[in-house]
Image 1: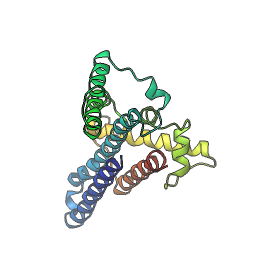
Image 2: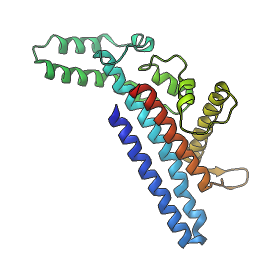
Image 3: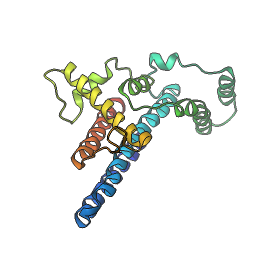
Image 4: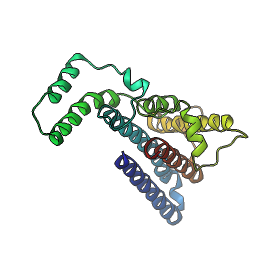
Length: 223
């Protein structure tokens, strides 16, 4: 699961480098700002995708670890539907005469083939979907409260509940912005032009996603 976080931080690092390239080119070619703004839009899409990928990975790996007894088994994990065919494949590995290390490796492969396709069809971007994914591997009942309480990002609010509301709303707005770019080419049909995008806005989105995932990792994986 630490590898999933390492891959996420590497992806964020590359996204930030993309922003540095934008800074350099926009200074040298000021007349091309409208064309260069697509680099900023790409950063938003990539950042949300990096978060989505991280959630997928820790859910997949965590589910397997729970089966192997390396993580606590949550209520959602216990209620997961598995077909009889999948049960049969797991039993076949368990009853094999393989040595322990090889048997465990085969068990991981069998479980991965079961749960990876299930998670692959899901999207983990909105807060409710993220909480749902984390419910497979995290016993914490108030997940967003725990994340909001530990995130290294200035959440607006006078108390924890207000900060949770701000966190969830901000995440929702970021995903909506990502969808405008990915699904609508960021086109404003009313004004017949592309929507405005600002470097400061993009940098804040990247920072928020980086700190949001960091808080998840610190709570779910390290604690």
